[in-house]
Image (cartoon, rainbow, N blue to C red; front, side, top):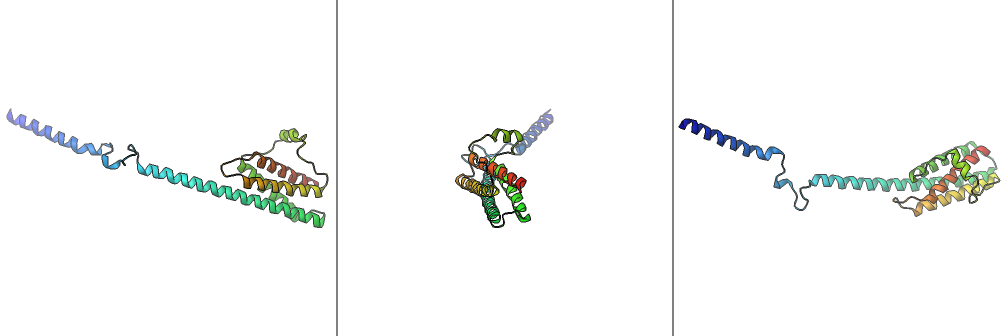
Length: 186
């Protein structure tokens, strides 16, 4: 009986030793893995979130700067179109290409500002708008195209990458309408 008792005691000691040895491997965080003051939060997760936030801010800043560059490009194209028409009083193939480029650039700006494509219903709604001048000649249309593009670029420069400008969206819509008008009138 004593040998059975000794065997049972040895077995109990081995089981307790195994349980103690297995405890640190159980997945419970030990005191060394916690950073003081973080409530058990892992620093690598915090660092990853901070890094992602910095990358997002850098990407937003880069996108904003690209939008400003597109605005400058649109202004340059509008000025070139106005000068070309004043000199030649006609459209060249290069002018048609510039019109297409201008429309693409301004459409991209409008999309980045949160505006969307105009539907035919929108054109019907705005057809009676008194605040939008209607050009009667091509020369007047080119002047208005340039002045509206200047207004768009000025509005873009007033905004921040955190804001949305309804005036800029409206100006971009007007520029696109003028480009479409000029393409039809050529």
